[in-house]
Amino acid sequence: MNYAKLGMAMTIVFGVFAIDLAAPGGYAAGVFYVVPLVLLLALRCDPPWCAPAVASLATALLVSDLYLGVPGPSQEMTYVNRGLTVFALWVVTALIEVGRRRGAQVVSAQAQAISLFHAALEAAPDAMLVVDATGQIRAVNAAALALFRCAREQLVGQPLDAVVTERRRDALAGTAGILGGPLGLPRAAGGVLGPLVGLRSDRSEVALEATISMLPRDGEQLAIHALRDVSEKRQLEERLLASQRMESIGRLAGGVAHDFNNLLAVMMSYGRFAADALDADHAARSDIDEVLAAAERASGLTRQLLAFSRRQVVKPLRLHASGLVTDMEKMLRRLLGADVELMTTCSGEEGLIEIDPSQLEQVILNLAINARDAMQHGGRITVELGNVTLDQAYCASHPDVTAGEYVMLAVSDTGVGMTESVRLRVFEPFFTTKPPGAGTGLGLATVYGIVKQANGHIWVYSEPGRGSTFRAYFPRVGGKPDALPPARTSATQGGSETVLLVEDEAPLRRVAVRVLKKAGYDVLEAGNGLEALAKVETGVKVDLLITDVVMPMMGGSELATKLRERDPDLAVLYVSGYTENAIVHHGVLDADIIFLQKPFQPDELLRRARQVLDGSGANKKAPG
Image 1 (tube, rainbow, N blue to C red):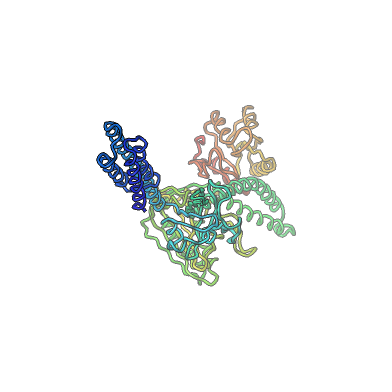
Image 2 (spheres, rainbow, N blue to C red):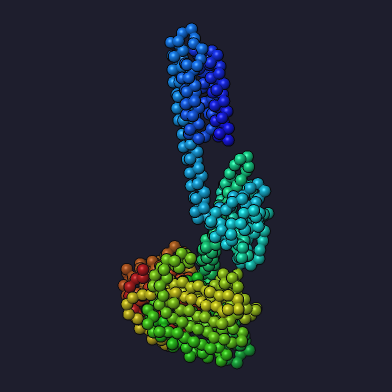
C-alpha cells in the first residue's frame, strides 16, 4: 500500500515536471512540486523514506529542467525560482518528517500504554471481566481464571449470569434465595454490588463483591466487572455479628436474672417461713416443699444466666487445670456411663490459668455432658489440655481474640456433629436441638459466659456425622499456683448485735428483717443509703451493715465508705443479684470482701452475717 502511494506521488512529480518544461520559470509550476508531498501526508505514507524520496526526485527534475527546459525571458529569475522551490520542497519534507516522528511517538506511547494497561489488568489482584451489551464475557484476566478455577476459553464467550449471580445462601436457615434477576450490565455504574455468588467450574461457590465501570469503545458499550473474593470477610462479619448478638443477649439475661433474683429471694424465704411453721406431717407441708424445690431450680437457672452474661460472682485462683481434670476423671466416668469411652490427655506441663475452680469444673462437666448427649449409641470423648500460642493469623479470623500464650482445654466427641446453622447458634441461651423437656439450652451458654469472664476464648469445630470439638483457650499467667480454700461449714446461729439492713426492695427487706430479728439481732432498716445515714446520725452503735450494692441515690459501696469514716471497725456484708458494680469488677470479687448472692435462703443470710461479725471475712477495709 505504501509503494502505491509513493508511485502516485512520483507520477504527479513527473506531471508537474512536464508542465514546468512547457512554462519555465513560473512560480505556479514551482508550487506544484510541493503537491506530491502534501499528498503523501494526506495518504499517510508511513515509511520515513517516502517524503525524502519524492523531494529528491523533484530536486533532480528541477535541476535537469535548467538544461532541458525552454529558457525563459530572465534566466536569473529561473535560477531563483528553482532555488526557492528546492528550499520549499525540503522545508515541507522536514515538516512532514517532524510530524511523522511525533505521530510515531504518539502511536508508540499509545501502544506502550495499551500494553501496560493489559499487563496491569492481567496482574490485578481482583478478577476482571469485560462484558458486552449482550451480557457475554469478552475478556478476562489471570485473577479471574484463578478465582473461577478454569481456563480462559471456558470463561470468554460465556454469559455473565452463568458464573456470577445475585443468589445468596442464608447462613442460618441454610436455604437459597433470589435477591434479583441475573446480573448483566449494571443498572448504574459505580459503587459496590453485593452480596454476589460466584459459581466455579467445580460447582463450588464463592462470595463476591463487584465494582462496575463503563467502557465505551468503538461505538460499543462495554462494562468492566471487578470481582473480589469476600468469603473471609463474610465469615468475619458473621463472627462479629454473632459476638455482638451474644453480648446483647448477655445484657438482657443479666438484667432479667437481677430482677428475678429479688422475686425468688422473697418466694424462697416466705416458703421457708411457712414450712418451718408447719409440722412435718401437715397436709400442706409437701406442697410447700415442692414450691421450694421449684424455686431452687429457678435459682439454678438464674445462676446459669448470670454465668452466661459474665455477671456471676467469682474468686479466681491461679491453678493447673490438669490437676482438676485428674480429680474429676472418676466422677466423669460414672456420669458418662459404660457405653462412653473417656480419654484424657494431660501432660502436666500446662501453664497456670486464673479462674474460679468451681467454674472450671462446670465448664468441663457441661462440655462432657453435651458430648455424651451427642452420641446416641455411645462413643468416645477426649479431654485434652495443652499449651498453645494464638498468633496474628488466628486472631485475624477470630476478631474477639488477642494474640498470646494460652492453655487449651479441648473436649471432642464422636457424635452426630452439627450443621453450620446449628454451630453458629450453639452458645445462645435456650437454643437447643434436643426434644422438649430434654434440656434447658443453658449448658453451653454457661460455658461460653464462664470462658469469656476468664478473659478466654471458645470455638467449636463440627461437621454432620463427624463429631464435634470444643476448644476453650484460657490466658496463661505467671507466678505460683494458689492454694485452694478449705470448705466453710459454719453452723447457722444468731446473735445480739445491732444490724443496719439497707435494701431498696421492700418485700425482700421485710424478709431479711424477719430472719435477723428471729435470730436475736437488733435490726435497723432503711430503703436507701440516705435513710441509712439518717439512722446512724441518732448516735446508735451499729455492729454490722448489710447493704444491697445497687440502690438509688447512694450505692452500697459509697454508704459503707461513709459509715466506716465514723467507725473503721464496722463489719459489712454486701448483697446483690447483679454484679456489675463497684465491688464486683466484671464479676470478679475484690479481696477481703464477703458477698451474699441473691436469691439466698434464710439460713445462708444468718451464716454469712455471723461469718462477718466473727471476723472470718477479714473485711476491715473499704471496698474499691
